[in-house]
Length: 595
Image 1 (tube, rainbow, N blue to C red):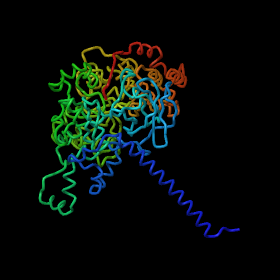
Image 2 (image 1 turned 180 degrees about the vertical axis):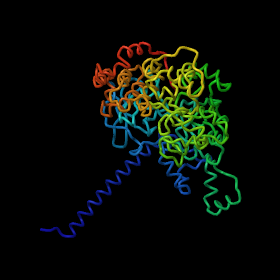
Image 3 (image 1 turned 60 degrees about the vertical axis):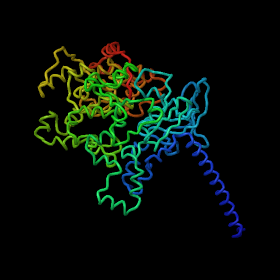
Image 4 (image 1 turned 90 degrees about the vertical axis):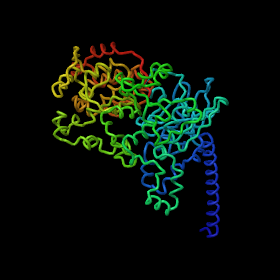
């Protein structure tokens, strides 16, 4: 018997009411969760002080807004949400204490140890990072945001202790506070708001993440003046004064000052004042108006350096090579201003990078990273800068300008990064500083004596006046260098151009595998992870799970050596005896790299 139309409509209507009620309940729950999270985040009250917020830019600048919105700058810091959270919140215990990350009805939470050593469930309110790794923040009663002790590595989709992501001796006692340091660069116009009298924090930002006004300055007056189409175009046609910063229209040096707000090593003129009130050194004011851009004394006199070294005797060595070249990531401004190219006032960050028209999100480069256009735009004489200069085949990795003049001698984010101090290969510098030179960084199987000979023959640079080793320099550094050198060597062993130059690209089980296997048990967890990643490029991503490195590095080392093959004919180049000798010679100097 078929139901009547009225009955069908009645049932449908009841179902619709039920769905509407469920939806209303869901939205009320979502609003409650969102409101609770917002109450723990830094306040956006500062927008009333000359700022407009990124959303105000979109109506007039949709393409620029969209290109920024796709960038890693935008997602550097985000309120927690289903789209922001990239980690695996499955409730699996991450250590013997039972600390874990899990989804709950109103969002995401972690269970972490409190000061008394008891597990406590805390809601996650904010994320940092979306490219290499992601860190999660919980709100403390005093108003600070402190991190969950584990970070999520995105390439491996695995959790690791925060301490394993940094190259430094292990320290269980570190507490990461977003409001104290991260707020300077991971938000727009951040004010930490530390009140020493009340012992509470009232932080303020314009936007979380690196948004429009971080580079273009306060935009409230600009938005107000351009809101009316008549005043927008009439004002411009009559030569009205600029009410917004346009980095692309500035000189190379002035535009680079804007990037240097964050991409530099700085020391506040008055740190106590900064912690209370922030600073008002918005672009285009130079960084020098609110901080000192710290340079190594071999490059510039530093009146603030004595105070920095008194507070931290390792301040220089944790940031610079001994000749003043920066060795940690995110500090490219120091390298830029020390480079010969900076002699031109038109040269700067935007000579190579673009915020709104990059080739790809990675590195924000204006040009194809595999070509030389970044350099040949200025150095365009093929007779002087072609193969007669590079001494390598035109299509080879050895003819890429950046491989020789901007080698990967900076460290951060569990990888090697190109130096932004444009320089020339020098074995003398390697001997004096320990920094790899570009020749040996590609030719991993060659010695310093070999590199010095070719540099002298091709470019007339005199050989060092000391006896040089005939052992392969980078291979030896992988086991005998200090922790920073070991990390750089481990990364280069997985770098495709170096593998091609060293005849390793087509050799699945070459002499590189046992070197990297030894680094799986390195005293520094960060070095282990760099080695693990290089092994994955050689043996495939399925050679071992990240959990094996987290929980059984010794067993992983043994299995890797077994897979390589004991007694392999390749063992003759760097045999077990040589590896043991290099390991015994390891430089145990403590290394802390302040990336």
